[in-house]
Amino acid sequence: MDRMAPVVVSVTDEYLDRFGEVLEALRARGLVIDHVLDDLGTVTGSIDTDEVEALGSLTGVASVERQRQPGIAPPESDVQ
Image (cartoon, rainbow, N blue to C red):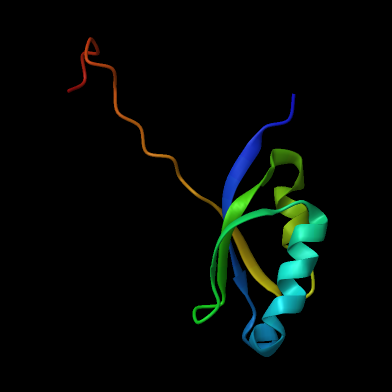
């Protein structure tokens, strides 16, 4: 079963004027885009966990970071 990992992708400064091309490459690689922050050169979305590292090798991608998922301990937990 495939698991999806939430990620934040940053685009290199050199590719900000070709942001749309980078978005298409990300989609083609399997990224399901949630939010596009083109002024910041950032995209959020999710991708199969096996494909996270591959995003970083795409032309125009500066970095790929997994988003952290906050969690709260259950009410019966000792930690509260």
